[in-house]
Image (tube, rainbow, N blue to C red; front, side, top):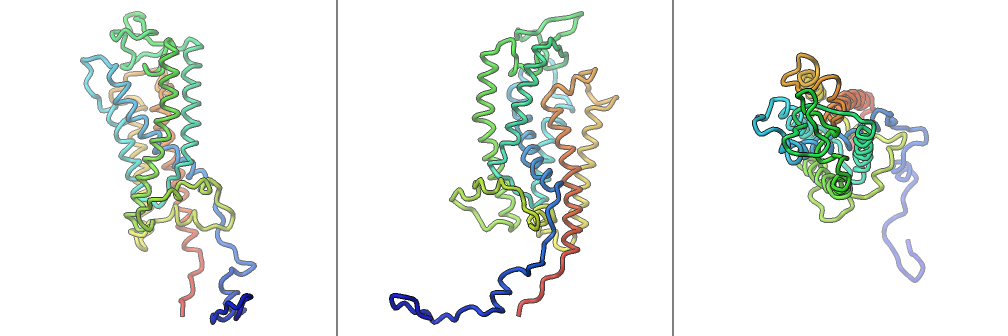
Length: 313
């Protein structure tokens, strides 16, 4: 075959059979990605981020405001330590990817919480509990009937001092949240590389591409790969689903221990726990583990129903 300007090639033109093999048959369609897989993708962007952020904020900002004579309680470890452990186990036992641009989802959640904390203050809401310690001299805390009562949820988000609160919120939203997203993307990518699902460390930024923000199109089987068992499970999909189920049951037990009476070391009452970002994170993590288990069951079923690929000559 010769081209203009005298350039010739010895490569024969593709045959009709080769062209037909290179493109899918007109009527062929792969398994479409269900809505639940997209919900799992959004939750996977939110839950690890909130777990790490809640743990860091508690131990660095909130716990130092506790009374000096209060020791670290089992509830503290369960809600601000085990959540990170469950996130790491889930990431290590799955094939999901964490894209940096999806930090937008937890970013929106935190904006909602900042607005919620201000609404609680503006409406005159009050809280009691170990994080409300009037001995620290924090504005908005007073003793009512012998009980320390606060008009804020966290000392770092105390709207009685709007200047420092706005500054803290701006630093968290504009600096800490994106940096934590970069950390999680790198961590999950390293796990996938160790699993053989990535081709090795890359110095470029192509894995940060915003093109990954587009939802999976109908007919794409990427969701089956993302939510099916990783290669190290081999053909034992049942073991993968058993691990997913164990994580869900374990987190359910923790949620019961810290919330349902008689909860261990339960310092609050009257549903005040729901005002804390920690509780938001706890419930979101349970929802994620339940949704991703259902998604993984569908992915395993879709993989088994897919026709086997013919052997290459």
